[in-house]
Image (cartoon, rainbow, N blue to C red; front, side, top):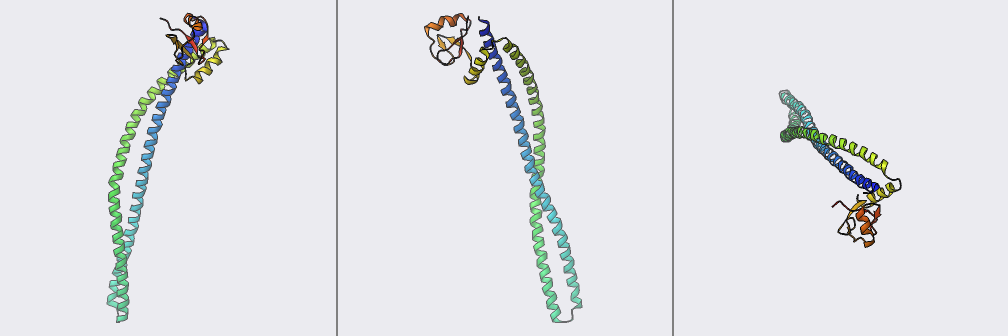
Length: 235
């Protein structure tokens, strides 16, 4: 077989291998990034719920202090009853007590709503925390496996890249740009076989004029239709 033709065939095989490893690296990297994004998203959701629970607990503590103040105020109002001198003062005190009782009732209702909300949020937050920790543990194991695959893929990629450099160095300078252009524009198939007198790149029948030349594999011959470089596989 023509030496340059064989080199082009070898180069295309190496390029296929390089592309395969690059695709694998991208696929695995995307998977790792996707898993990391999922964990971060869930941690963000958890943080929002924890912040909400913390805010309600702070609000509850503030209202409990307010309720203590209201109860103290109510107690002082009741103690004033024994100091009342006339009906006018009694009416005023009754009005103040009614107002304080209303405030107390509102605070108690608000506290009840807050406690119910906290009771609902607390187990949900705990459950999410546990689930996220389990997912992070699982992700850590998966990431370790993925990184092992990535390391192997990178090692192979380095090996294939070195092989490519060695092969490219032997290819005629006029042929290399043509190969690279065909490889890019023809879906990675710059060099293809002729089988049953048909170009396996474009499925067009090769003219009788070229068939015998292609079968000999002694020179660089291009398909008349798609311009790919043709060769005849060993029988």
